[in-house]
Amino acid sequence: MASEIWRAISLTVGLGSCLSADSQEADSSIVAPKMVKTFHEYLAHCHRTYSCIHCRAHLASHEELISKSFQGSQGRAYLFNSVVNIGCGPAEERFLLTGLHAVADIHCESCKTTLGWKYEHAFETSQKYKEGKYIIELAHMIKENGWGANEE
Image 1 (cartoon, one colour):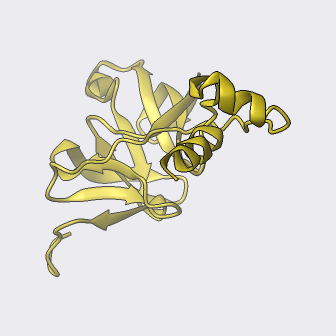
Image 2: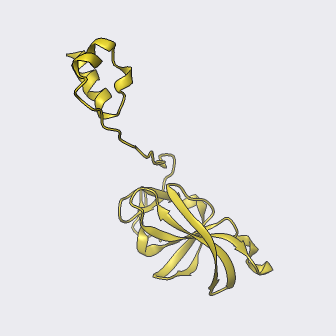
């Protein structure tokens, strides 16, 4: 019974090479599927988090929030010091409300939805504080874990 369960688990996650030679010979007609699992960071230590509204993957902790005074292409947006579970596209120069910046679109690693952008370079001295920071539009995130009814 235990060997059957282990064999099923091994085949499911593509660990066919971990099986004994006897069980591999018996199942030589079975091709083990190769599954790719992307592991997402879970912000368990955070009291309040922001998550992707589309798939609920964690994106940032409230402690990483710098400003709520930003504007994205789809409305209000927040500036974060750091984020998790994010993929980054190539950087390109764009004229934003505050001038010329080199930015890279960011997307949720789980559902691939574009969420905002990362500031790679600011050309104006007054905007240098944004470099390496992330914008996530409110249209794409939801508050989770420990938010009070009156907290914004």
